[in-house]
Amino acid sequence: MANHKSSKKRIRANERRRIENRYYAKTMRNALRDFRALNEKAVAVERLPKMMSIIDKLAKRSVIHKNKASNLKSKLMRQVNAM
Image (tube, rainbow, N blue to C red; front, top):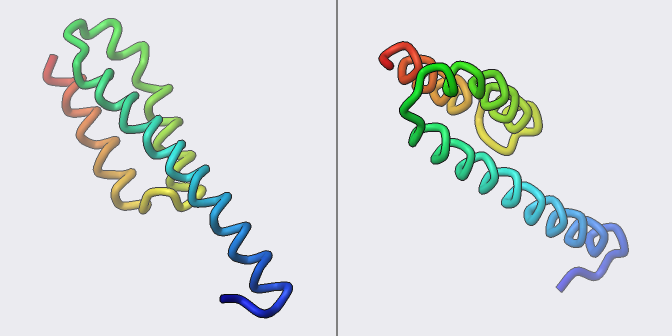
């Protein structure tokens, strides 16, 4: 158990961040699932910038790794171009 005031605060802060990061990561995964289920190119092209923005924000916040973000964006672009 933590004995110092600062270590107790760090534990509380880490727990808050963990829960927040889980929320953002899950939201991104749900958005990806919905995006991958699209069949119309026009709709996909319209939603693509929003997906890129979500992925970039998570990479910026270090919720996901920057290389994972790059790979996800690449896969989405290939999906849209293949439609």
